[in-house]
Amino acid sequence: MNAGKECRIVLTRTLPGPVIELFHNSCSCLVNPDERTWGREEILRQVREHAADALLVMAMDRIDAGLIEALPDTVRVIATFSVGHDHIDFAAARARGIAVLSTPDVLSDAVADLGMLLLLGAARRAFEAMRLIYGRTWTGWSPTQMIGRDVSGGRLGIVGMGRIGRAIARRARHGFGMEMHYHNRTRLAAGLEDGATFHARLDDLLPLSDFLMLAAPATPDTRGLLNARSIDKLPNGAVVANVSRGDLVDDEALIAALGSGRVMAAGLDVFNGEPAIHEGYLGLPNLFLQPHQGSSTIETRLPMGTLLLDSVARVRAGETVANRLA
Ligand code: DGY
Image 1 (cartoon, rainbow, N blue to C red):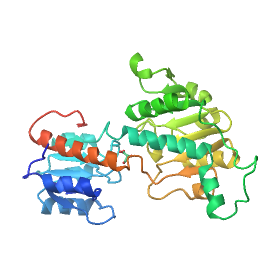
Image 2: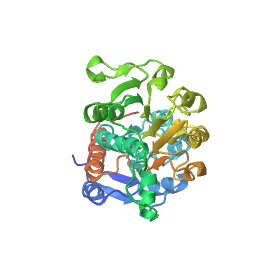
Image 3: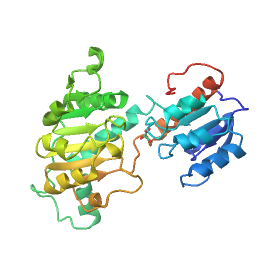
Image 4: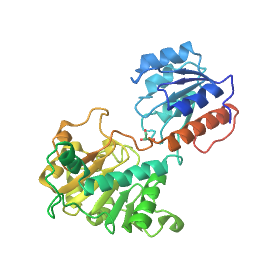
């Protein structure tokens, strides 16, 4: 659907070519031309100057109460180009009657693919292996070289069984024959469990998680969920992956466990304080790190853009949309 020629949107970052083209064809767009995150004052200035009625933001923008309260009355919609929404103050948006939209569903497969990449990359020591090649230190095949762990047939515990968690579970169970366990705020309907065993308590999931996947949203309840205490409950030599948000992890605790071998390896796509990364990670070999790119495929970025364009238009037309969060 066309968001309406009269729709005026400010985008805090540009989008991949075909996606930004869609926006330009549908609305009057003002786009941040740089790969630099705008601060609060810059966002407000652009929104005011463009008399925007929608603001399209990214996961790294802090859309806090102060910013929302200072938005001009023209702004009726805040749309985030992400499924994560911990960067937006919903209460402040509700208080101003501003709709908040996100991009659920359309990115679940891409993020789940990356989740499997993290598990595989960590368990099969992909970073160390590549260093052998690029460091020109590989001396040839050896039966003792780079011994990792089989993901296939392993036991995977997923924390957070939303759309992304379930997409990972499908791949792990049907593609890799993994035994599935999960912890979630509520138990899934039987039809959605797909053979995964529910654990109401995180502490009951952890000892079964030879592989542990963090896929829960960042909330005050999940902050620092992977810490010294919870790591201690994992099987020795577990492999950990995080596709959610960095603040689910206590970095110091994970770095210590990776250093001692208590955790064999970790695959991380997200970090506390991105784009900064705790220095402790950078000295360790048993990591497989990605720069927050779970949804970064053209097949996914296009529908993310289409979904937001469509839902901005519907909200402006007074319709109800499924991806409205506030
Ligand atoms: C999301 O959609 O939340 C991804 O983490 C990208 O920001």
